[in-house]
Length: 237
View 1 (cartoon, one colour):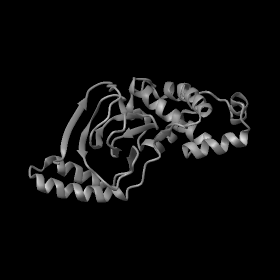
View 2 (cartoon, helix red, strand yellow; view 1 turned 90 degrees about the horizontal axis):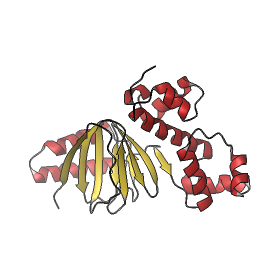
View 3 (cartoon, rainbow, N blue to C red; view 1 turned 120 degrees about the vertical axis):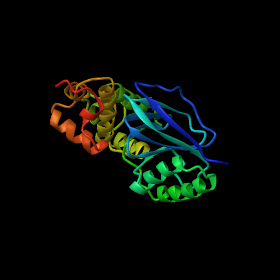
């Protein structure tokens, strides 16, 4: 089946309904930031990465400010069986751009084979906010996602959920692959990116999600997304 290519651009905030595709979707942002939402977790999608969405997986996309990019709809083996944001090497991004340009379908298929081979070895970015299966842990993560500034510690959550602390720690790590502190940092960065996309200042975003130090927030944001938070919003400081 031929490669299906779509270019997209949204000049403002765009919130797609939950949907699924008959074929796998590979897409990259040339500019902007998006939040990919699915039943197994949320992902932040910065520019310069490739997002893989397997066929048949329900998901939605929330753009955090203006975005532009490219989607390829393909039948691909060798990529993760779950959604993932992949750390795309420069060659992979160049191949994607070239596939969009070529007019010869056969050449496009050959370039796609090289691209998929490159992505088969690409590591996943730590930009996922996984959702646990346990209903009690889901209550905790839903509360933290809604209010990342919530400062309750593991002892407080264990008491609130009626779980021994050691059980909570073990189960949370097993079901999300992240420690509690790491998960909360991811939740804070995802919410901060959304706030910045809506026009909040860097200081407003940092304080709203629970950072006491704006410089510490900027450092974590840059480590997670590769750019400073001022890139994604109107910095009125």
